[in-house]
Length: 430
Ligand code: HAM
Image 1 (cartoon, rainbow, N blue to C red):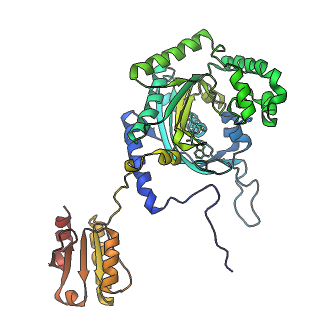
Image 2 (cartoon, protein in one colour; image 1 turned 45 degrees about the vertical axis):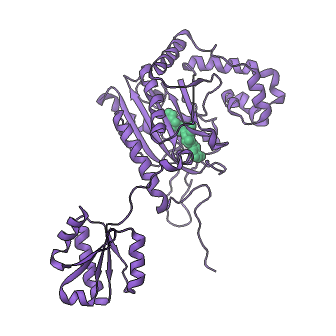
Image 3 (cartoon, rainbow, N blue to C red; image 1 turned 135 degrees about the vertical axis):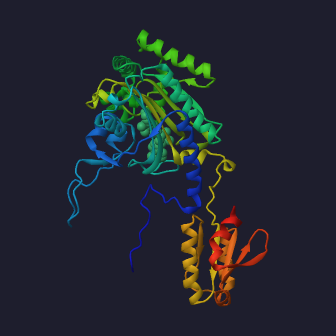
């Protein structure tokens, strides 16, 4: 038996029946990002593993449990070894790397960048959680990015994208982690608060207590959740300056009419965040309900060897957006053909194929069945293609130097001299 191959676990084919919806979504997103002044950047799907460890954090789940590393050595055959590289689990680190490498700080005071593409995490697959998924990511970095208006822009932009996609029932949560020093104070407060409950925490959280206490706040275990709730986490760890900054962000958001909830226990799963963080969820998605998330990362560029510039960004998960989008708001982009050519007999097929070449050269979308088949079966194909015009070209038409043109909507048909075919078709379609 010949071995059959299947799409790898946690990934999926996006089939032609669905690519129209993906394209429509991308058009809406690109238009919106253009309106806000963001430009597209494309980085490789793999980077040095160290880049992700240093930015996302060595003790995070994404790095510890989910990073898909490329082969450490070349295989048995002569394949190239890609040691020290990992498939990107997210886009922020790569964009910061590209920002530094290309000296963007010398070119412009604020780089406003976005990307749309696949990300990879070795997670246990379930609805809305994949090993290859797609993100729309937006990042702004540069000497001028340290303004609460940028925080408000990022948050309101993510909301606007969702609204433009027809989403309504999402919830926005925001919080501030403060500076690196504030975060250290926050982590100490948490440790002190959690200490009496160490024995009741799950095994994972007991080790998180030592390595990265913030991760305990994301634990899904019921008893850990209860303990966290009893801590009554507040924003007491914020310095006066950090608190003022966050108040400014909230004030500006209020002025824009953006509705949010302040969630003091929300810390996010990636280590690079400072100050404002936010998450958008949709209850209709079940357990994997995060549509997107983001925040400030004011120290990351410098930590990766770049200049000291502030930065902020967010990412939305496309698969989850599609799950949450209302049916009527997912229009398929037109994939119908303009013209379908029915050629009958070998000689007509050869000449019909040349007509097709000429029509395509003139920018007219058209197709044909490449093997001679009956009129009936080709007509069926023509119907399936959704073509507005059907060209019928049999031996008799060939002898007379004409092609029969049938308008599918109106039902009428006429003979067109072969030499005028492109022009007549063009006029009929306009
Ligand atoms: P994140 O929260 O790890 O943040 O991911 C952002 C979004 O990607 C999630 O809210 C979710 O919609 C989607 N997502 C994540 N993992 C999966 C998965 N396994 N399957 C399906 N969808 C998934 C980041 O990645 C940060 N880079 C966001 C950011 C940009 N912060 C600042 N700039």
